[in-house]
Each structure stands twice: as C-alpha cells, then as structure tokens.
Figure 1 (cartoon, rainbow, N blue to C red):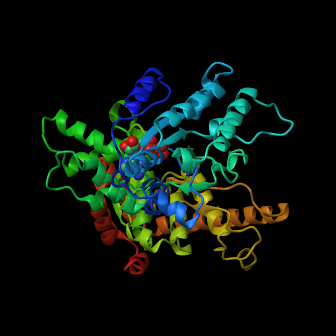
Figure 2 (spheres, helix red, strand yellow):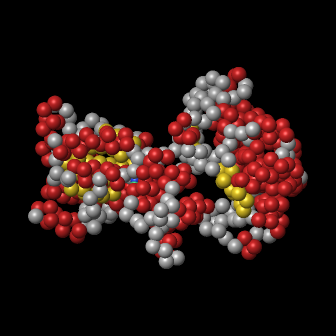
Figure 3 (cartoon, rainbow, N blue to C red):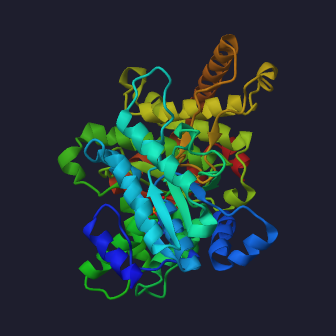
Length: 493
Ligand code: ADP
C-alpha cells in the first residue's frame, strides 16, 4: 500500500518516473562483464546477511558509463528487477532545466520518495549535466552547484544498508564528472556499458525479435554481422522498422528480407529517385569512383569481399557506395594488422585515384574529400601504432594514442576515434605528421598504379555500373578475374 501511495505521488510528479514493466538481465543484451559486476548490487538486496557477515561495504553509488543508447537505463532497471526492488528514475538534465532554485529541491524530493518506497534503486540519467567538474576561477553556475551539493549531501546522509537504497548514475562522460561525486562513499564504483560487439548484437537481435512473429528464414548470425557498429537502441529501432515493413505489406511475420532492408535504410537512408537528382555526367563520375573502390577492394587480398556496389544515391549515401561483407572473425581474433590497415588506406584513396586515371587531373572533384580524410585517419593510426616503414617512427614517444573502436565494423570504420592529447613534444608531433603525409602519398601512387594496370577491368566495371546501377560482389569478381592484371590476380589467389 505504501508503494502504491508513493507511486500515485510520483505519477503526479511527472519528472520522477516509475515504471511498471519489470526488466531482467536477460532483457539486456551483451555486457556480460557489467552484469557480473552488478550482481554485487543484486546480492546486496537479496542476501544482505552475506554482506553483513563478511563486513563488506555495501554498494551505495554505482556509475554506469558508456555512449547513449546502449542500455544503461535498461541495465539499471534490470538490477532493480533482479533484486525485486522498486526503481525510481530521474534525469539530472531535468534538475537544472527547472526554474532557479528548484534543482536542489528536486534532488531532495527524489531521495525522500526513495526513502518512502525503499528498498529501491534511484537512477539518475545524464549525471554529467549537474556533475561537471567545477572550473576554478571560471564562471560558476550556482544552480548546478546547489544541485550537485544537494546530491552530495543526500548521498552522504544515508546508509545503504539501513535504508536499502542504491543510487545508480548514468553518464557518457565520466571524464568531466566532478571528482567530489566519485569519492568513496558516493559514486565510487563505475561500470562500463559498451556498444554491443558481435555477440552483443546477436543477443540484442534475439531479445528484440523475441516477442515478434518471425519467419523461419531468420539468420541471426548474418543480421548481427550486418548490424556492425550499431548501438543497442539502433538495433531495437531496426527490428521495429522491419516489423513495420512486414505489416505494411500485410504479412503477419517479419522476414530476413524485411530486416535486411531495415538495416540498409538505417545505415544509408532511403533511396532517392536518381534521375531527378543526378545528371548524366555526375552519374558517370559516381560510377568511376565506385568502380575504382570496388576494384581495389577486390584486388587487395586482405580486404573483405565486396558485398555489392551501387551508384544509386540514397539520403544518407548520396554518392553511391561499395559495401564490404561483414568480417565476423576479426572480432574474435580482434586485431588490425598493418597489412589490413595499409590496404584499407589504399581502398579509401581508390575513388580519387579512379577519377584521376579515367577522367584526368583537370577533372578531379571534391567528392572524395571525406574518404581522403578517412585515409588520413588510418595513416595516423598506423604511424601511432608503430606500424610505419620508417625505423624512426616504429617506437616514437607518445605512440598508441589513437585507437579504432573494436566494436566498429572493419571496412566501415564507423567509430574511428582520434585522441588529440598526444604525450609528445611538438617536434615529435611534426615528425608524425610528415610520416603520415609520406604514407598517404606513397599509398596514392600505389593505388593509381594498381588502377592503371587494371584499366580494362576498371572500364568494364564502370560500364556495368552505368548500365545496371547495382552490381553484386560476385559480378565484380567475375570482371576482375576476366580482365585483371595477372600479377594482381596471382597476389589475390
Ligand atoms: P542508455 O541509457 O544507455 O542511453 P537505454 O537503456 O535508454 O540506453 O536504451 C534505449 C533502448 O535501446 C532500450 O529501451 C532498448 O530497447 C534498446 N537497447 C539499448 N541497449 C540494449 C541492450 N544492451 N540490450 C537490449 N536492448 C537495448
């Protein structure tokens, strides 16, 4: 009854939400490690004697850290569900959006409510909205300070053990959090909730298709591969749009084709009527660029096979695209070799190379700019990982600062991250820049030579694309095997 009353009060107070649906760990895909760590909180609620007996300090504040849409909220709800306690959620961004002076009152309300329904979990989303490190001397934000102070007071003021409350905060920027928040006795545990890897995506597709009528042809493995780089929320969105596609056509079951189309649309947008938007000259240029890219990808042995290449523009891929097959094994082996990165660099330069080879230097366009930037990022990664040819750059100080997010899909590099804080001197940074330049220039020469050697195959692919718009990877291979240069074909075999 107490809970019901509190719930009613909460309903009135729309900023604090309490949900009726109970979530369990099974509903959260991936993140096995986080679940193991969170079992401590579950144990604390379920078997408090164990905690008392061994004198362990009960968990009080737990921080869930990770990019948005990967299940931090879901995970916190699952902890409540597994523990069989109430779940009270609130967002720190809302604290400070309120009128002046209300932020602190909000926090007080939140904890009062929690005390009245305990045992419970308080979930505070977007904790960094209030908990940013206060800048000494800089302009201070009183509202935010008051709110965060109130939060600190509340956290210091309760004993988790006596009151049965655990506070869980979510943030994607742990680095900006006020260190006062992460001191012992406050949010002193932090658990990472990551973007799903292959295994996580596999579980996520299954979770989201669990309650939906599905056709017999669903291939979870291939879907998890195709969803490379997607967040948990995006995967949920894709399965949902697939259901929508099926129901729009009056089919009761979601099929593999529906899911593949939904993935395609999520990644590249909807297709647009190209004859309305793309003139003949522009269309030919797209064909030249994509023919170059798919040819290089097919000839270079470490690159994944081409799935298809298209010059049909869509809203999010206006130039057409070459799509590689997802490489599932790379996740289990988990390495980016020098050879693979070098070949990826060549592929990224191949569109521009093809423009030069087929259309001439005078006719180069700016359309390949994003791919050139990408090539540069790869070159930086290589130099910083000590993969440079040049002996001086193989163990330069401050290397290893850049990394490729391991959950991004090879060949797509959706989440390439560069950290700008190099632990290097200025002259070392300049050295790295020069080495990157050298590697890009060398790579470009190499890919232009590759395309020139294989000009017959390049021309045939251009014609094929102009005629058919979308060409499968298998057809690209046929052209390459028929017209490619024998040396390159031998290297491929
Ligand atoms: P966050 O709090 O990290 O921003 P949410 O927990 O709010 O992310 O996730 C939003 C939605 O995305 C969830 O309601 C769920 O449908 C889906 N989702 C995200 N991550 C996962 C996951 N790991 N497993 C299953 N579904 C997920």
